[in-house]
Image 1 (tube, helix red, strand yellow):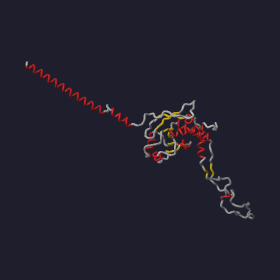
Image 2 (cartoon, one colour):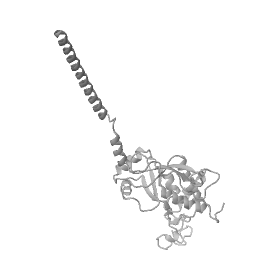
Image 3 (cartoon, one colour):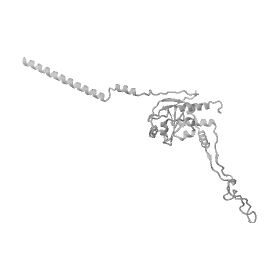
Image 4 (cartoon, helix red, strand yellow):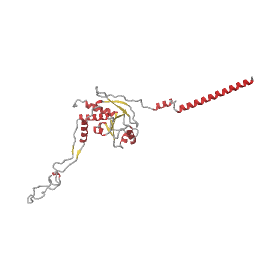
Length: 299
């Protein structure tokens, strides 16, 4: 009987030790699981809240539409992305509406050619000049006597039929080839150039020209990352450009800054990409639409 009771006691002790070892193993496994979970950031609620507090920019898109003057009831407005300049990669800040009469004009090569020729000629001055008979610095004397030589009569050697004589119908420079193209053709040429850039996806609209660095490499990397081509024209609504942008673009000859009041057909066609601020687009649209809807415009 005593032996039987001793055996039961030993069995209970063994069972108790086994349960304790199983509990210890389970606790160890639970600790390892928790460590792995924290290592793989399964429980990252605090981190998400912290990152949400760091981001200060409002949710995108910021701008989805804008008011258009003189809307066309028969044509839907064009649309374009509004981008940023403060990061290397492009961020879409929203979609804006563009007037179809300004950015959707059918292309006409003759109007563009007339504008380009006019812009070349109105600032060109021809300095070519050939001396006439009165401009030659020669003495007024007869080359030989009037009679007794058997030659034709001659009063001087300044005439155009003499060697080293004056020119009868040569150019009389300097003179200007200036003429003025009509307002209608200038306004139409500007709308056609903008429409062509928009159709070729070479027109980009940004919120501003502010960049975080004046380093030229930042601007070069930004243009290369966004595939803006080898030459870019930046247009703002004022002639006072941001300091960092001015310093960065001054190191390149193919990246130019221009105020909106100086925008022209030749400069648009000369550069591969046209980058305009939203303020410049609004001011340019206002001027072109006012010119189109003036009472004295010839149709």
